[in-house]
Structures are given as structure tokens and as C-alpha cells.
Image (cartoon, rainbow, N blue to C red; front, side):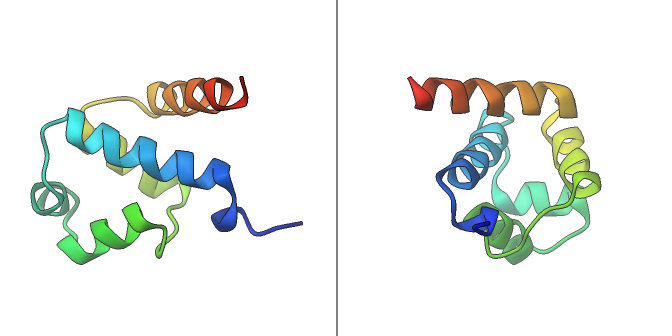
Length: 84
């Protein structure tokens, strides 16, 4: 099995993460402040250098002002659109 970080689905995940941040009107620096992390941590997450677990993803979603289920729904919709 191929590591998920090297798949096109993971690239869609990263794009969804970045788009959600941008829709929330947050810079990487502002998001980092909300998370209690560094800007470089946020950047590494968005580039796929640092993997997020579900607990961290939920914290990102809360900082975006969305729910984890809404993030997952967005991600799933993007995957479905990609496969068409």
C-alpha cells in the first residue's frame, strides 16, 4: 500500500485545508496564534511535511469556525468531483 501522503487524495486534503483557512480569512500566522503553534508548523501541515491526526484536524476546524464533519463533507465532495 502506498503511503497516503504521496497520493492525489492527500493533495486534495491539503488543498481543502488551505482553502478552509483562506475562507476563514486567516493568514498562516493568525491560524498559528489561534492554535498556539508557530507559523512554520501551519505551513508544514499545509505542504504535507507534517501530518495531522484527527484531534489536530478538529482543532484546525475549530480555528476555521467550522465543524470537523463539514470539513470532511467538503473533502469528500472534492474527491467525488475529481473522480468524474
